[in-house]
Length: 345
Length: 269
Image 1 (cartoon, rainbow over the protein chains, first blue to last red):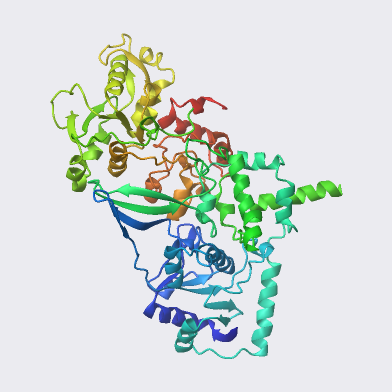
Image 2: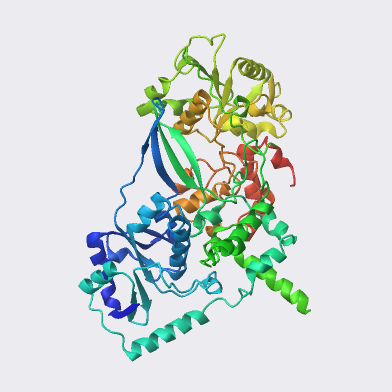
């Protein structure tokens, strides 16, 4: 990895340089929260945003995406290839980059890469930015508070300047042209160490740090805790909509108003949706919120780990505020904490 | 209460299309404001494309020709509020291969349904002599309380394109499921701020998705016109109201607007 230092004032110049050649997406203020959106000027960027309502996945896996079109009269199909603009995601936090890495594993790096996802991913540069945790953040528990790969540049705030991790030539050239990157000094390195420590010490200490979460998920599979937690599920799937790693989708067709042409598209789906596990004949394998919530937590904190060696949760905390029924992984960690203290007592 | 919405299961996913002759469609109306029928005409740009796929045999809004003896698809707006309407609906059902309920009144009893609570006592409290102008009144109810409904187009008023899609499903066949998930995930996709964070009541917590949260996109809380989903968790939603400083009695009162005749309203209170 190559590291360089730029001054904080050079940040806008870097964004402007990207804007010359790319569509730039960055966090902006909207309503009471923040969203990632296409910007027209660096002034729009909320560099110190806490987190965004929904995640970045919409740029790689859109909520609704056309896969092919068909002629319902001749019964023939046409492949659909969307024109994807070269894009820079500017200001992604470490958890979100780690989330993209997980989506990459599922859609890009497997035996059968998803062409729609891969086309978007390949057209996208990621510029990360360091952050400070909110009360709902627990990325450090899943080792997702630093991004080791999956970005082109990562800007670490070290007070009035950024230590920039550089991992692609494409982005390095733009950094070189737009700013005056210099070699890091001892002071820069020392300040980076200090900034990292400050972040680590700033996480909400009330969120329990539990070891062996995946095994505990198995051990307490039948505990009545799941009835209580899932029993209050509203079945809205807001959790999955804001989650940066929920990637399930449904395939649907629709006809043009005159019934001659059609389109096959995919839309976000979620295991928390009532009909997700309904099969032909009408049987539903997970008919109730209890089974659905447990299933979702299992995939996040157990199942994905078994296949990909990492949690599917990155601890971004979005579901904590999205869920109006107070269902989120922190509640699961608290349950395990409680089980531990019962034993101690 | 059924766990799902009607989705053409009676038709086994097959359409009523007959390759030898055009499909005959009738549009009928019970207690309603006619707004959903008007919505169909609002689809000006595509109206002829839609109408080109079948023979429209009866539509009071456009022609005073009487209803034909036989037809394939009955599109029905409005709630059933009289014995005459109930009889007509049963006749429509007998003659139609597919029956499509459109709008909140037909699918949930909607606004007419608000009168269902204490229905037989109400008129006497208003009139000394109850007039017989409307026929033999019965407690308002949605179409599905009387006959099997094959497809439903929800909301007040309907989206004309949703209507077109449902009509095409009846014509050409489809096994697509109508979602019973609640609305909130649509707001997350749209990245609009949640009203609950402002202590404001929004019915999205218990209302079926499908409209794309269009009221919220216009800055208004959901009024619940799609009706509560068969999977709505009213008990948990009331707790959510408490947690976010929203009045539970306001929530319960608002539920009455589009769900007065829904059995779930009267359970577990």
